[in-house]
Length: 285
Image (cartoon, rainbow, N blue to C red; front, side, top):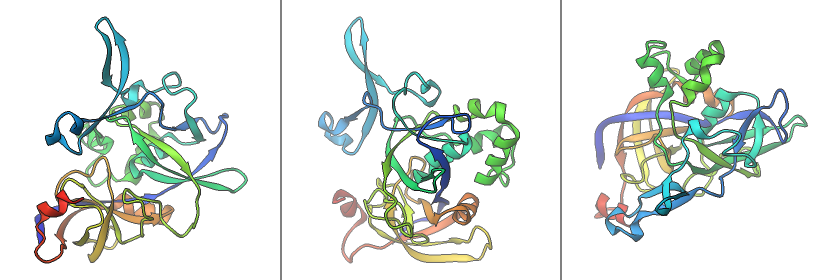
């Protein structure tokens, strides 16, 4: 069945960052583990109609006693609030920011060894696109606001980068994983390795994880038609809506070139067993 006429598809990939186990003059940007004071409140326990809805928060003392408040936004997360939760250190703030958007990546140390860092949790704040902010300010055009264009802006405006990044209150925490098979993709939300060119991130509120979907869009570099069967095996903080997908391109710089340029219209057809309604498939997820 067609789940909508047209929607939006972007791309993501598994980046490689240079890093260190210890902080020094070069490696001064931390990637953080999930902090112990981050709470997940499952609202379905109180309100069954909110099944699947979770909020993040922390406990604070107040004159009325202990209460749960929203977790720290990005601008509030610093060397004090996250002290002791540094996982590894990397050398580039904008690369670390895009790693959070991708959700997973690899870090290579000076001796050539690598580790994977995978999504562990989020601070619970909504994602806000810094590319859209730069467009609204007139600093980039829509065509320029690709990942590569935003990175170029960051290199040209280092003193303005931190305030821009803080415009996005969302923050991602990571966990360390072994690289395993270097030819395999990172593990997605379905808990299986992603396949370059055939794995999608989708919104599980509309498309069940594991569902096969036929997408019809265009190649980000050649603009040639791109039609294929792919599997929804992942999710993403910015992937919201019935026909909003992220296309996994693979590992490394070449994959990043494609992923950073993919911002296209897409048509999609969700494939379900004969006689199964989409609502039933979602209820069974």
